Length: 70
Image (cartoon, rainbow, N blue to C red; front, side, top):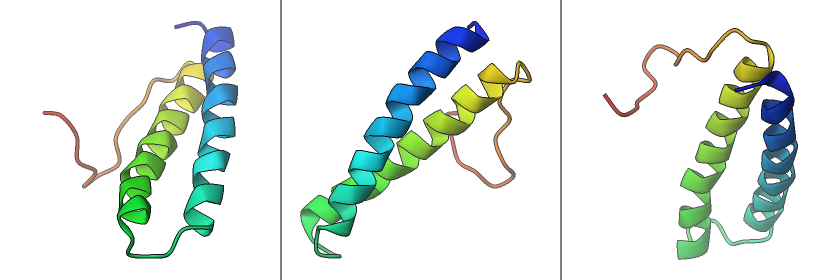
């Protein structure tokens, strides 16, 4: 993927991630909506990290202990 395309995608991901965090801030902790927002927040964080690595042309490496599809 080109760094320019990764940057374009990253801008959209950041905007949506910000919206998800705002929803979480307005949602009671422990509610089913809050619980569902948690993995969405995590997925958007991961996507941002992957896209940042693509923009830097260095590739993405998972952190030690971070789960994933094996």
